[in-house]
Image 1 (tube, one colour):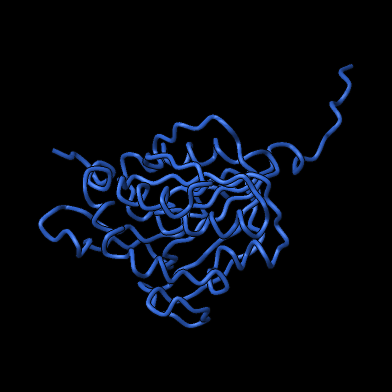
Image 2 (cartoon, one colour):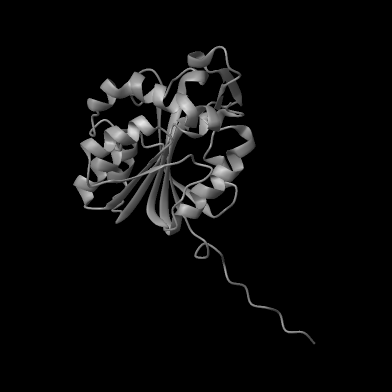
Length: 228
């Protein structure tokens, strides 16, 4: 039996989510997609891209077509990956959760769009470490998720019989507080409308952040004082 939220999504809820949203994903509008808007607005031109929680790879397929990048799609759903391999045979698919991604490469761009709010709190920091490991020095991270002012925990309505929650918080903070990432740009929208808006109810407010990773360049060099 699944013991935590990660295992629940790996065992069956990832498949259920893909089944519920399959038709909507087939109608994906790349022009309205906020992660793609950020890539375009800030002239990010990635050569290698991995998306964690990529479903059937619809977004990285658009990135590969636009920029000629090498792309990888990671998702816990076997159904999503099976569908993606049929639709996008040129894409590499990996079945995994964010806490344990079996990839060794670092990428110019890592995308994690509306995933972190489902991750079990016991594995959240491990997932953050895995995401960070995949971002190359000087590379970019796109995070999309709920962005309330407060920390909110909402029961996951698709699994009322399970103790599963949607955890809503500003997930960019987990990276920016390290001072190894800085915020390049942010787009804020409403969850239901999926359109940009300055005024959104707190529990519906979502943001997509473009962060850049820098391991050394942002440090100021200071001379060591001579000892007497």
